[in-house]
Length: 133
Image 1 (cartoon, one colour):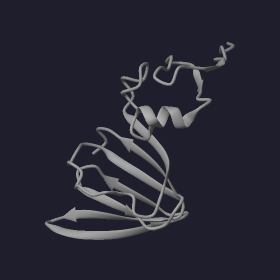
Image 2 (tube, rainbow, N blue to C red):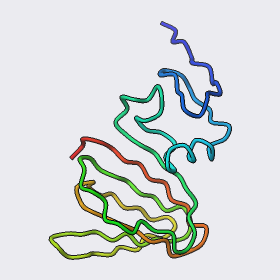
Image 3 (cartoon, rainbow, N blue to C red):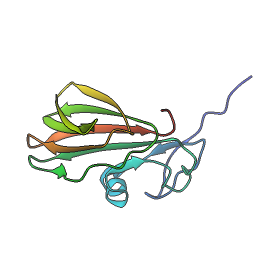
């Protein structure tokens, strides 16, 4: 039985057609529309997917200053270049982990966290999964 191979198409930055291969010719434009996230359930056509993906270049001093709200699921963070420190609030104590190029963190979304970038041009890929914890 032959399977139909989907065609690669360019789509508007706010729309994906399920079952198709998607090419974003201007990924930065997609990121600008979605706070840095390039895939997630808030993009038309992806409403039901259980994950989000972000890839961004950050500069020294960029930060998430407020603690995240606990949520279901898990997050995988991969630092491709540079370094960032992620702070976790565990049992009322702040724990800090510095993640450098080639290192990663796998965390529960239930743990409040915030972060600060340590080096210019730090590239971070974040994949957030829902409902897995």
